[in-house]
Image (cartoon, rainbow, N blue to C red):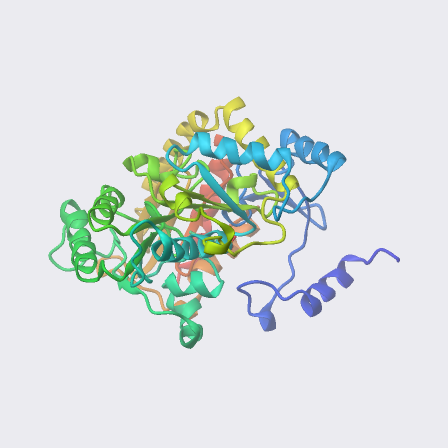
Length: 450
Ligand SMILES: Cc1ncc(COP(=O)(O)O)c(C=O)c1O
């Protein structure tokens, strides 16, 4: 086959590739040929800093020699071994390693995407109550938060709460007990930042008190609701939810697909509030952003409820062909090795500080309503009116415009509505971070001029 030229590839991209979350009638092809470190290179050799970590999953940079080498080595042994009836040393080692870094969660169910990791958690929680020591078959519901995002399969969409993505599928979804997102920017009248945690926890307390006999689990994105626009929970909220769920015998599912793997400054966001959930979901950065692998970690209490004779039918009848794929596991083990070798969590602290300094400066812009940050995860919210917090109409696509301008300054960003997201690989250098923030600022300025 003759190698296609760039024009041809762009045509094929428009005609044959149905892009995720994209209006294909307006799709403008943007082909990336290669990448290195935190830089993406397009077909013409133009370079862009990756300001959003390939959609929040890259950790140590692109083409990291340790990760590349680990995958190549694995490839020389075997690319895939099923977990249905067999296993592979690399996958076993990864499960052991995850159990070591997530105390209290020693059992690992592998899948292949964040949404699957959440589906697995939802189904495990459901089945747990059907067959635990004192079964409670009425416990079949979930409590979740407004604007939550847990992936795009029907179970994860059911617990999700982003109207623009999810409303279309409403007839297909199961009902959940829905509570207000604990938003610290748009606080209800009469609530001040100091009382926000208490205010939102009161809803949780009441809802769980009323529904605990039917609630299988609470599903939460710990600390940050990422897809909601980097919405930050008040500190203490997660610990409060854990305390209430424990008291009322309701399971807690922590969806760390976006916030896990160092993103918020600790390996897992739950650590910051000393929380051990019953089920913890990982994806995205688990393989450093290299390969599709996800995991649902479970406590011993959950695990034990699934043990028994085959004929008791306590088995978890759920699986994904590529769950626990050895190439992905090799990338994940190497990702964890690099965390240690490069002291990634300690090394990111000055970057977190530098990002905070940039955000503090940017926040004075007349059309920036809020800047929010946890670790190397930040959102800059554009508003029409700073005093009233009136948003720009979504149809004006201000966030997209800002990111388009940033691209012309050599920085790739992808917004969430009116929120410009800054979420670089943890390996970003201070100089690169400066360039990303300055490009974002210039883009925002340009996009809010009229
Ligand atoms: C918190 C959270 N959960 C789940 C998912 C879904 O992950 P995936 O796209 O790998 O299915 C995402 C994706 O952004 C996420 O942010």
